Image (cartoon, rainbow, N blue to C red):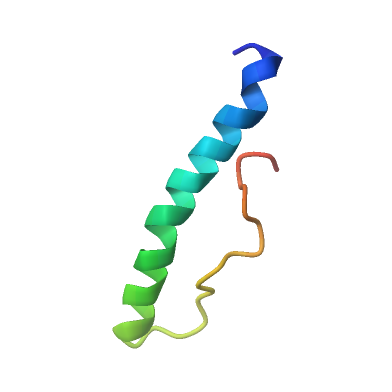
Length: 48
């Protein structure tokens, strides 16, 4: 992938990841699981 597109595509992927992760974390919390974080500390896991 060209380096020009790497950052925007990474943030697009992170947006999709977070849009699925946050509702999943809320569902997990509602089912009684504790210790999860609704908003992960790393917003873009693809950059690490």
